[in-house]
Amino acid sequence: MVLVDKKKCIGCGVCTTVCPAGAITLSDSEEYAIIDHDLCMECFTCVETCPQEAIYKDDSK
Image (cartoon, rainbow, N blue to C red):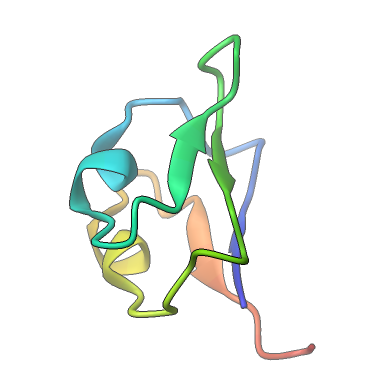
């Protein structure tokens, strides 16, 4: 599962542009990214491109 650390995320939107599934949007306030886990393909492109390292792979679930 891919998760967002809201404390690290600055809402830059880089992840929204690289997600091939269109699974990432920004919150209404654009302060952080939101991942739609039903759409996420877990390709981890967002994890690799996030400049703040705010998106990460969580293997605990």
